[in-house]
Length: 341
Image (cartoon, rainbow, N blue to C red; front, side, top):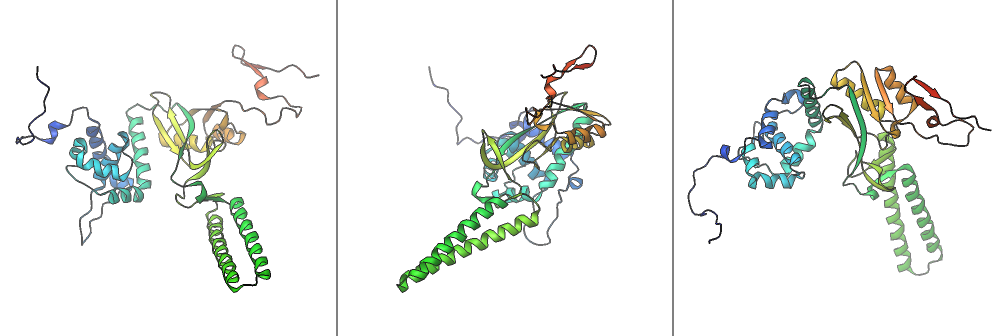
């Protein structure tokens, strides 16, 4: 019995890329979807230069990104490599090989257009009756970002750094008063100059924070925020809000603007309602979203929120917690808790 062997590499083979990609391949779905998108309306603008090398079409670059997202090819270098070795990507882009730099810049320059493309897709799912729009479940998940915690600042953190620097400068100035040797004096003066330069840097960051109007600022990724990732471990990342339709569990909308769930209910609900074009809607959320202000906003705009009750912040204020009132579905009434003695 012989081993199973492969083909002869020196043998000339006639083939076409069309037959190399299966009929149910994800690449074919991406190809079809992007071809029906109104790229110009979404903000993908193809501009031909009068000089230099012609650009890639936005539709080809978007196809590459969508294929990479499904197949966990997230970095620009992974996508560049896939254009050279992945038979489905070669078929999808018709042999184009954009560089990692080109891929990265396309993502950076078309952030808003990417979001509009997703919203357009949700509209298509609604037209195809795959999204019902009657009940939307809203929840959040946290993801880390490449911004280090040391490059994330709020006003308290900046004040601590400046206070530390001021104390160090004061300490160095006291050393200057007692220094006798010229070499030691020069060394201390260099340390003071270094601390002054650090202080100027923090003052610049403080100015940027004040001008942004935000409570914190990240230097590497301006959109990232300091969030509690897991079990009180603080890291820089995103608290991603996501809305999901009840019919087929398909995503409807998302947002990364908040660091917790307290103020996210009504913005997410109103956004989903407007996107789906419905008159009335229901939402399902956990107790992290239970805030009287946002429950009222939802109710006033034709949205019925079903949110888990939040435990009272103080159990010793003489009031009854909401969860002590028992609901009776048969009579549609609430039973009050026993009177406290």
